Image (tube, rainbow, N blue to C red; front, side):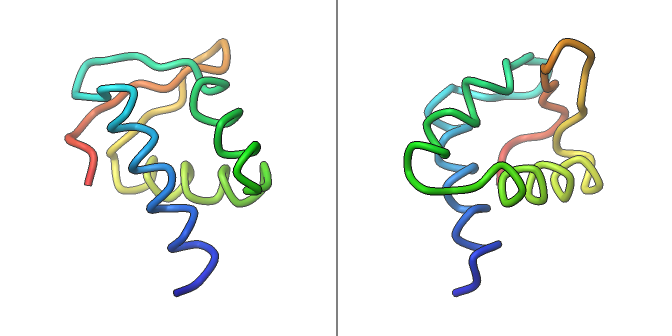
Length: 73
């Protein structure tokens, strides 16, 4: 399994732990900080979040926030 896939799984688990669902807004630090504590880098986290944005699962908002657009895979 690649590091990207590991990060993707960790983010998916974190979003589910935060009860992310469509039309919910999340603070990015609530996602980032626990993942960084688990050894993921900011670049790895950002790459996966960018992929989720391209897939229209999440949208970046001002103020370091994310909007959930679709159910988390």
